[in-house]
View (spheres, rainbow, N blue to C red):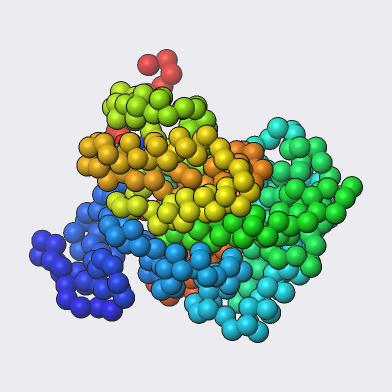
Length: 424
Ligand code: SDX
């Protein structure tokens, strides 16, 4: 994986190649050799780690999880199988999948005390505020799986996080609508269980709609992992200090909440609703292009994809399938379709290579299923937990990894003497 070197002044640095994608220059000795740092705010040209989990070719619009395309996984796999793949590196046998699914199923309940945490929140608390608090609080309950140096504890913590996220997300929703929490039902699939905990009520049986179950499971697959995005990098950085996995995932949830990242799905649907009618689309496209207007097309653009986000393709297809099956329509979807068409014909978006991303269509289908927009990012966090956990495990076992501690270009005052108050 190593061939050649790259020169920097009088020094030469190892050039490393991965299995596919850009090479990297190993600059770990650059400061010691030159007394200089690299400068890369936002890490647009920086590889923070080696990883075998997910590969993105932004120019070609390719997304692979352990070598399998997102299109094939979304079409032919399911979220439990993709979770196993991300965690273990290979597609499971039937027996392995059954064992993994049963293990996850058996961890879906949360400590009964945890329900008390919800009572402390206002009913109108944003579900992501609740998720940040409650997931971080898991550290206070599962002491038998917080030792990151014990492989067995890492596995249990990983399973607990993947299993309990749907329960916590459903509890956040139930609390916001004043309905009682439902316990998990082990006879249901991972996704079916989540739908029942969210939309079921104790007063009557809840029958999982297989069309919705399949669509939701596919949406989870589309959000499972995505290389070293902001929230994954947050989880890795938190984990690099030795923090326990529950605290690290809570940090990832906090980062995902931002509208430039996972919060974009909520912002995108709010934007589409604000546009309201196709005749208002040119007005919003003009605003998005106006340098003096902070408005951006939410659900558009991406740091890595300079082509169509392959997840958006699957998401749009899923919207059409679900709408046809449910015999529903939503004028917001028509606005989204026409907004995409007009934007992609516009030189501004073409020159800057701005295409719809995973968040552009997801809100349309989540809204049709019955989720309030405030739950959209919580659903993203639910699905991304397996990616965060897989990346965290990979980091912990990476011999190259050490505590993350970037440096800076200092632009503040140089040393100066203190001035007493009566002298100022
Ligand atoms: C996710 O990293 C990941 O993988 C994230 C994610 C994942 O799965 O983890 O894929 C999930 O977060 C998807 C992205 C969701 N966010 C949004 O949809 C919010 C809207 N999009 C952006 O704010 C923006 O596109 C980012 C944040 C996604 C990417 O920003 P970059 O890479 O830092 O690019 P940039 O802000 O430097 O923009 C480049 C140019 C700028 O113009 P110039 O200053 O060069 O003239 O493109 C413009 C921007 O103004 N631009 C947009 C735009 N996005 C970028 N202009 C209008 N509308 C937009 N949406």
